Length: 564
Image (cartoon, rainbow, N blue to C red):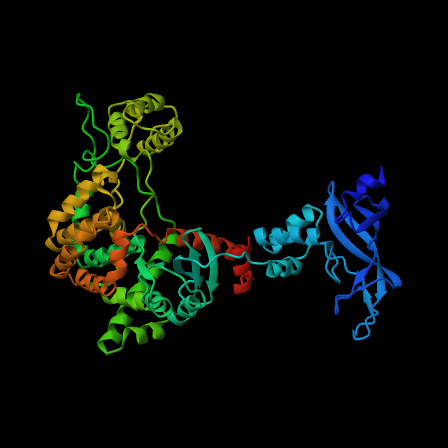
């Protein structure tokens, strides 16, 4: 092959000459012999050019692979005399600033490629990819290149989003700072203290708007570091705070709510009140519940649930005992190794923690199961026929979903496979439907009314009229959610007044907190700024942290998040 053509593929054809090319004996790499063709050298100390050659020597460096083969370069460079009398360097080696750094064992372009691999994948995963691409690099080398990656120059931010992220949940947290105009992260802070954020804002003047959650530390830090900036409370966190307030109220009336839900799920009209409209022709009477037996809980799982419940009860009793002795929430949290938020939650429980329920995931077939059950009782056991019928009623799933459900019904009814004989069917004990948790009920209340299912709307209406305090809480929560979504800042004062005079301690406390942060809440109701991009980058940051297998130090995380 013509050497002139191969010279075009060198790192810098203007300063290098290809002397020889060979393939190694094992055929795994290419060996290049290259010489420098610079006419002079520049002293690294005095920057004066020198032409007197002292000697030559060879450097062995790696370059980008060719056609999947590793490239090993034997580079011949020179030593020069520095003839400047006042320069302390008498002899210096020739530099190739466009090819590789002094003392480097790889070219700039290979180092950049390995650096991008490290930024994208980290150490261990990046090493595996580098080996597959014939750019051999160890874990430590990739991480070193990641640390050396230059950070992009960005203009001073005007719209800023701040939020915390967990080094280790419940124990150690940091802060992420995001430019909301470019949707780019611009820094990671080692903690979430007000002083740290305030100092960062002083070092980066010009911030006009800061979006944040309801954290008091961020509010204090933003006020101290950028007093001219407008603080905006995040609307999602406002709704989340409302869900916590609503949950406290529901917990005060847990017994009445569970009795109402249990009566509703066991009533004969429970299933008939949800799902698509039922045909009006004569059909056999629908059973109160689906004919599926309850799934048996494995003994290990049951034992684990019982142990967890005992631990929760013991913690509740300990917290109540320490509180009666005059301990503060901070002291109780330090003594038991838990957060103050957990202590407050246990103190707000009037009757102790109830056993946790794990609700099954919703299915696209749920609204149509009552109809399938009715048709099954009428003697229709053909899956395709039933699939076509529910499809006409609006079902958008596949026939496989219907088949799998009818297979469970067939087994529960005692029918052998492929049997359509109703005489073979055996009665099955009805199952009690899963009750929704209080947390699920809270988010049902805060959802948009037009997105609720009919059975969800019915349960909320029953709760509203079953207990005065619960009805008041639901009304206030729905009004607050509507005010947040529709940015109705003119209704804020009247809502605060109603919440304060509602007689509900949780809502009174929430209204007091909103008044203390009134400027940020009003800004959230009137401005389009949101902390959503910041939350998205936190998810990305968590993925990077877990991908690094325990080597996620702040400098590495910062480089991978900002330089990629």
